[in-house]
Length: 235
Image (cartoon, rainbow, N blue to C red; front, side, top):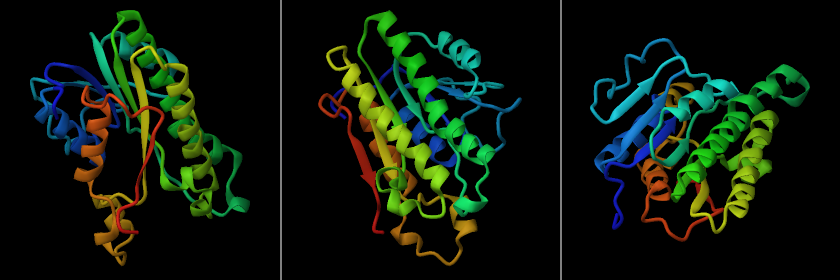
């Protein structure tokens, strides 16, 4: 990348997950300082960067809680980018989808993206510097026909997509670029375990997704704003 992330402070929600770890790896390679909120009381055993000098892992941060999100972002100096990978997935026929399950998808995917985007914008505007926000929608969020059997999930990811475009338009001219990726199935250990008979070669690799996310979050990205990047692999 021509423009560097060297010593730039970047938030990565969902940073302890499979995609999150891949994104943190790429950010560290680019010289960034990573701030990773963790909803648990201790770092997950599988997270490889607990003691890394440029990773600040903060436990007991609940991204659906306004005060927790506000407090977390208040502890990030000179915020450059905020990458929102935290989310969840659920599927069920609509007649078996209860209101609570719908609300959970909206909270886990759309509400967390909103609260973190808002906190990031406030920090960036207060500092008077440019910045980047990257959200994660999904293929069913862009093409709801792909959301059959997962209507609550598709609706929550469509909300993230709409939010991304609306934010990008609102923040035009303020130096804050807002984009999102919309992947199909990611090639994670969990997805392989859940779908052992699938053709993994058609899925989106974590490295490919991380590369796209880090580009969107970098100073090298000077033109992409309000873009929903489809990452559909070979499917």
